[in-house]
Amino acid sequence: MFILKFAGKILLLPVWLILFVIGLAVKMTVQTYAVVRGILGFIFTLLIIATAYCYHDWVQVAFLFALSVILYLILFVGVFVDTVLDMTRERIIDFIIS
Image (cartoon, rainbow, N blue to C red; front, side, top):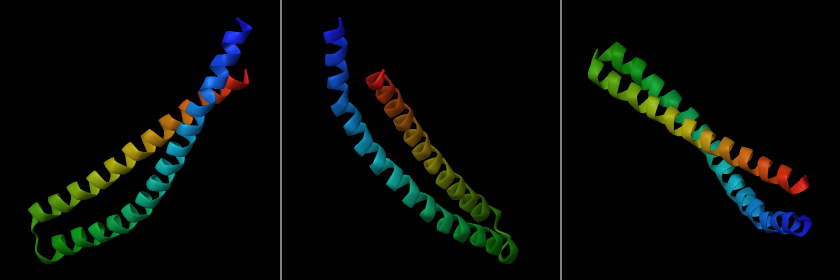
């Protein structure tokens, strides 16, 4: 029984390593997207204010607001995937260490 547990732990090391590399790529992508979302969010906010003030075109304001919401949703999905990968890696490493 000890040999089977030890073999299972050894076989989980490559899985943890692959998840580590994927996690790094996801973290870098999410951080880069967060910066881009911040810039685009600022631009969309300025466009919303300018469109509402100058043109009073509420359809375009609603469209720009929908684009801003989509930016947040994409960031939310990225952070969710990043968190799931982190939790999975932690559980695997806890199993390997135990």
